[in-house]
Amino acid sequence: MDILIKKGFICPVVSKAFTGDILISGGKIKKISESITAKDVQVIDAKGKFVLPGFIDAHSHIGLFEEGVGQYYQDGNEATDPITPQVRAIDAFNPQDSAIKKALSGGVTTTMILPGSANAVGGQGAIIKFNSQIVDQMIIKEPAGLKMALGENPKRFYGESMKRTPGTRLGTAAMIREYFVKTQSYSEKKQKGDYEKDLRYEIGEMVLKRKIPARIHAHRMDDILTAVRIANEFEFDFVIEHATEAYKIIEYLKARNVKMVLGPLFSFATKLELKDKTFEAVSIAVKNNVPVALMCDHPVVPMEYTIMQLGTALKYGVSEEELLKLVTINPARILGIDDSTGSLQKDKDADIAIWSGNPFEMKSCVEQVLIQGECVFSR
Image (cartoon, rainbow, N blue to C red; front, side, top):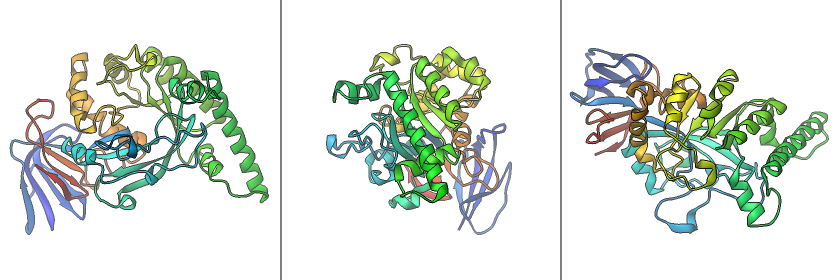
């Protein structure tokens, strides 16, 4: 049955908010306007409520680092080799992670799941929706990116713990370069028909052919610059993950149209490379009009607290309208799914969160969540 959301305060995020109606049919937004009349529909009374697109978190480890289970179900890092491009996040993802329902209660409907950052090349990510208990039915795109990591994490896992490469930043960068040189050699042999299929280099080939981006973990300014340098050397598309000190070189990044998923900011600085973390990074990025989204890095900040992280950024001079874009249309564009989600527009997926009031007010809560027109959460 079609659904008609009536008299809600609708925040499309790509246009001015207004009080009106949304007609949903076949999982899509069929019509959105100030007043809609329809017969034989299920009516949702949204009078006095805020109607928003479902939030999108473009970088998370939900379902990989599970909640409330201790060390036994923490499957985000294959920390036995610094180069593991062949592993896939979906093979460790548990759709029964209790954090998923909590994420829905915070209005989040879509996320990019990624391996952790122990490895220089850590594995393949996927874009999913929280609409099923069957992993394969949740997938929007897979593989959707190849995770890499610069900075302290690979050094700590291998140099300090195992006394092997990479033990330094230069060692990590060298291993990533070596991986792509081997991928190039693999591609040349493949073209000649003289090769054996190798999953490690098949995914690297997708990056070099720009079918998927590299998703490069980099906090510190110099690590971000190394990521840009390597990407330019091998001419592949990339997204900077975390981008903690990007605000220090924002003009450099803007000139190169570098995409980044910023955060988490609503957390303790657990290591040296986070010492200059600041919420001012949000306002600097927004004011400079760079392609930026805001992540929770679940479980670092539980995904259910997405709006709290956004709300904290209000203190630094960014409007509610601009902040909402950081968890809706901006991540959708960065992930390449903005044709189907990320805003409330005709013909897009009906991924909708109905809030009891303005989401930036502490007393407001999510009352109902729809994904492709199906109710997946109600309070």
